[in-house]
Image (cartoon, rainbow, N blue to C red; front, side, top):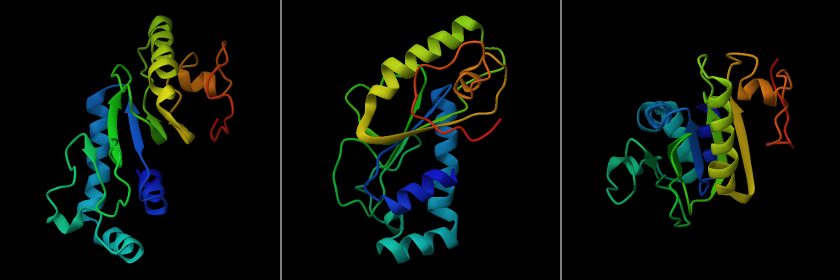
Length: 173
């Protein structure tokens, strides 16, 4: 949550994709972010001091996108088809979109079978990562829920190493 807010403070024209195991889980993460954008008065004042407007345009600008699945910041100076923040589930298509930051958050589940893990990896590598803009970053935020999970592969703890997100820094176990 904080990482996304900090990114957009620094990059007001940035395009962030929150991708989770399910679309509804990603929308829950966005709801928490929106809570800060709408109701955290300290954050709102810092945002306004930096960008000259509140994140949501002081709730008066009805022309900006502000839904449970996508948000545009009022300070954007570049119009793009992608919102400032949008949501996706691991199984949702995002064809034609391009993001500056892709956050994979809670993609793994304790009950994921080896086949499910492989299907999720295919979705990540063939549907989601191709949506990265040329100078994009990706972050994978996940507790290791079992030792053959995607997070375990990225951390080098699984029997099979991850062959994606190869240029990575691992912070954790």
